[in-house]
Structure formats: structure tokens, C-alpha cells
Amino acid sequence: MNNNELFTFAASPERLGVPSSAILNFLERIESERVCMHGFLVLRQGQIASEGYWAPYTEDSMHRMYSVSKSFVSLAVGLMIDEGKLRLDDRVARYFDDLIPEDLHSYLADSTVRDLLMMSTAHSYTSYTRTDANFAKTFFLKKPSHPPGTVFSYDTAATVILNAIVERISGVPFLEYMRDRLLNPVGFTKEAWCIRTPEGTSWGGSGVICKLKDMAKLAYVCLNKGSWNGVQLISEDYIRAATSKQIDNSLAGNYGYGYQIWMEQDNGFSFRGMGSQLALCYPERDLLFACISDTQGQANGEAAIRAAFREEIWAHIRDSPLPEDTATYAKLQNCIGNLGILPQLGERSSSFTQKIHDQWYILEDNPMEISRMRFKFYGDEGVWEYSNASGAHTLAFGVGKNVGGPFPQNNYFGNQIGFIPGSHYQCLASAAWVEEHKLNMLVYVTDIYLGRFSASFAFEDNRISVHMIKAAEWFLDEYQGFAGGVRMEETEHTHC
Image (cartoon, rainbow, N blue to C red; front, top):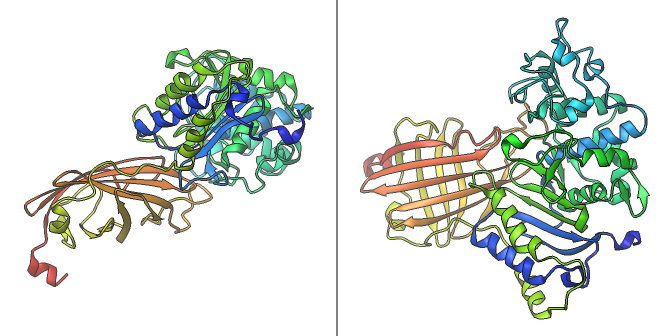
């Protein structure tokens, strides 16, 4: 297979043993279960069987990969081992003389590169929080709970340390170190980048921003034991180890863990990121399924994607080409062309639309610190105006449809954790009437940080009840809790 054939579309999914009906059923199931996916790709034998994106996302969208970033860091470590600059048995503390305390615990002093790759650190949970000024330093200061290299404990600080080692040895951000050796040969997006830790290193545990195909390409290198188009980019020995079970993690229902890479059933392995960023690889079937999503706050969101993939696609794949199914393939392509993130479910109109239009409500003390709010409706769009601890805000939303725009808060992190640039995240906002007197709102943050919050506004006579739920890491904290209030009297309204 020549380089131009890799990651190009097959004439039809059937040519690769994948029924068009299977992919169509998968997409219809995802929509019926209202799973918030942003993009998907099915790769078989190095060719694309199918690919699609939910508007406003496209194949060119840069997307937060969250913990898929960990698998990228593992590949950087592999490259460094290939160069002889790092060893699996190296004790990690030797690279951080400036951070380790004089009384470093023996468990931490004995921790090796291999221990951290396997997520078998001496800590029971991630050592840093959003308020720490140096993520790497916390790894050595936090009291450990058990000997390293013994049991699985998912610890993002392990990846922070591995990433920092790569950058301390190479002197450049880890993606830049990987460029000539791995990323450029596979056509990885040149604009890809990584959010930084407070101390200034790449946040390799969570912060890579790239395209869906970028993730899939690195997963494909692993699927092919470190090679791309016949060229060995990373040693086969390292990739075999990284994609093989190195430690048991069945206590949480998993199939094992390699080097920052998860094991899957049917002798597969995967890259995984929060919110259902996934690259599921099955070497024995030469199959890769990759997706980007935001299922935070959606009960069993990733489980729904996995079940739909297993039952609708995996179960129907064959090892030889299938008869062409032009009619179903046309339906599939039409479905892909009309994919879009679903708005809030409910009715577009209610008798309360005009009753509450332009009416201020004064809220009693509440966890969100919202003092007042009102809604204005203009056909199938509207605005929510409110005041909270950070000032007066306005959010535009669609009624029964999504409306894109800036999210009102500007006190969230930007390109570096711990630093607030004062800019706004982009979002999608929609609302609909779920009962005659109750308006629900759904907001997806679609920026370099992904998250969502849902709100329910119930109106009765001159009173309002509010319930907000947020699902996001380290932001949207202002949008969680209950509140109650009353409509401002007309005389007060006049003086507002």
C-alpha cells in the first residue's frame, strides 16, 4: 500500500467488508439515544470506510483530546527510549533535583519510568489540583500510599512527570520533539498544540488540541506495530509492550493497561479521553474506530457509544469484500451530510412564552449567586439576561435549535492552567419547553475546554424555580444548584 492510499476513502464501505447499513444503523442509534458526538471515523485495512462530523464540527476542527494526550506522551517516551536518551528502569526523581524535597519518600525515590507508564505510581489519586502552581512538584511532595509498580491507580500526575522528562531532555515541547520523528511522516496537523501546566510545560496528561484524523493516525501507527507505510517510526518492541497488558486493572471492570494505553476485549487496545475521545484498535481485524465527543454529564455516554459500535458495526464486519449496496450507501452519505449536535428536546412554544417575556425575576440567595434574570424571545431565538457575582451577562440561545456564540463568563483558564486571559469560550445554546410552565436550557461549551450545563426554569404565578447542573472540569462552577425567586413588581421594574 503506498502512502497516498493510507487514510483515503475506499470506493465504498463494502469494499472493506463493512456494510453501509451497519454504519447507518450506528448513526441512527447515536441520534436516537441523543449521544453528543462530534465526529467519527471507521478505518479498515488502512482505508476510510466512513467518516462524519456533527455540525458545527468538521474534519478540520481542532478538538480537545483530554486523556488521549497520555497515549501521545507514551509515544514520545518510546521515541526517546529508541534514541537511548531514556530507559524504562530510570528512576524519575533523577530528572527533578530542583523539585524533590530532602526527605523524599522511598516509594517516590524508587518510582521508575515504567511504573508511571503503567499507571502504577505510589499515589492513590492525582497529586495536583487546579490551584497548584507546579503540577510536577506535587508528585514528589504528596505522601504516597503504597509501593510503586504494584497496583493500578489512574494518576494524571504520572503523565505530567513523563511529559516533563521528555521536555527536560529534549529542551522543546513534546509535540515539537515528536514532529520530525513521528508527526510529520504521518501528516499530523502542523497547527496542533497543547495547553500548558502552571509551570509552563505541555499538559500532556490532558491538553492536546488536534484533529480527529490526527488521533486516528497515531493509533494506526500503534495498530501497525510502530510503522507507517512500511517505515518503522517507533521500535516494534516498544509498541508491542505499550499496547499489551502490563498491569491488571480489572477491579474497575477493565481489561488491563499497557503504557498509557488501555486494553480492550478481542485483543484490542485503545486511546481514551474524558468525554468519549476514543481510538479503539483491533489488530486482528485491521480495524480502527475513532471518535470525538462531549458526553460529560450524559449518563453512560461512552458506554452508549461503545455498545452502538459493538452491536451495529463490529458484529457485522466481514473479512472479505461484501456485495455493493448503493441504495443504503446513498442513505448513509445523506445521513452523514445532515449530522448536527442535537438541541434541547421539547416544545418550541408555550403559553408562558409571552407571560415571562421581558420580565425580571429577583432571586433569593443561591449557590450560583444569581441575583436577577429575565428572558426575551424573538421567534425561534431568545436571550437570557442575568446578574451574578461577576456582573451582568447575556446568553443568546435558540428555541428548539442551537445558536452559537460566546459564553458570558470570561474568568476561565486559557492556553495555560492557572492563568485567566479574560476571553470567552465559544458555545452552543438551546432551550425548549418540557412542560407548559417549564423551560429547559442546554449549553455546550465547544472551545479548547469542553463542558455543558443544563438548566430548568419553572414558572408559577409570579414565582420562579431554577435548577442548574454542570459537567465540566475546572469551570462552569457558577452554574450548579437550586434557586427560587419572584417576579419584579411593575413599579420596581420601571426603576430598574
